[in-house]
Image 1: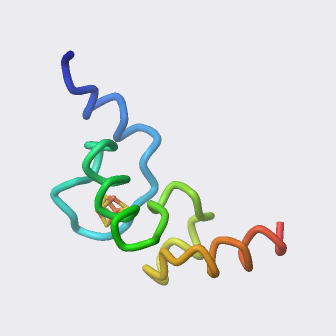
Image 2 (image 1 turned 90 degrees about the horizontal axis):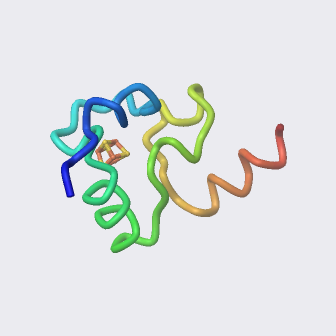
Length: 64
Ligand code: SF4
């Protein structure tokens, strides 16, 4: 299966300079191993805090 990195980048809101950007399988694996969620689970402002914790996700969701 071919990597869809270029297509994925259209939907990636991560502002961190990271080599995994657009490589969603590696991105989610990395964050899952740390009990976190990737940038695309957060709105753009919250994403910029780089707090990818589930607690921050839940707090952010309540503010929608
Ligand atoms: S969400 Fe995390 S792993 Fe994914 S591109 Fe951003 S910094 Fe990298």
